[in-house]
Each structure stands twice: as structure tokens, then as C-alpha cells.
Length: 92
Image 1 (cartoon, rainbow, N blue to C red):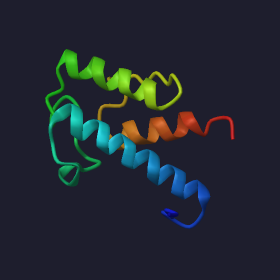
Image 2 (cartoon, rainbow, N blue to C red):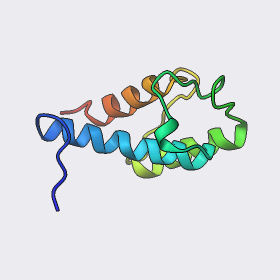
Image 3 (spheres, helix red, strand yellow):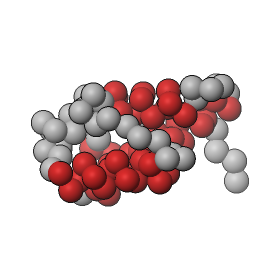
């Protein structure tokens, strides 16, 4: 089976990364992934507590090669997704 998202391989990888982040956030915050929007705030909309913050940080690190993301600076889901994708493609 082959999955293609977007116009090229890079768009596909970015799309798959976003799907992975959606699944992590959905699981950690117990929210249906279809209800997630880029405008959502980790602190305001999803009411992230310390445990969820630690878990999200740990999961991002585990799934994305030890990546450490500052969740305070990347509070919206759009900022978070962009930060993860940018960090992973930084050296390409």
C-alpha cells in the first residue's frame, strides 16, 4: 500500500508527521482527532496540565528522533506542527 499526501514526497512526509502529531494529541487530551483544529491552544482550548505537557514532550521526543519542543512558545497546534516539521527538515 502506498500513501500520497500533497504534490510530492516532501508534502507526503509532512502530512504523515501531522497525522502522527494529531494521533498523539488526540490520545493525550482524550479528544477525537477529527475535532482538532490548527487554531486550538494547548493551554487555553485543551487546558493542558503539567502531566499532559510532560507526556506530549516525551511522545514528541520519542516519535521524532529526540526532538525537544518548547510547548510554551508553540502553544497553538499550528505552531506546534510547524515547529516539529521545521525541526525535522532543518538540515535538508
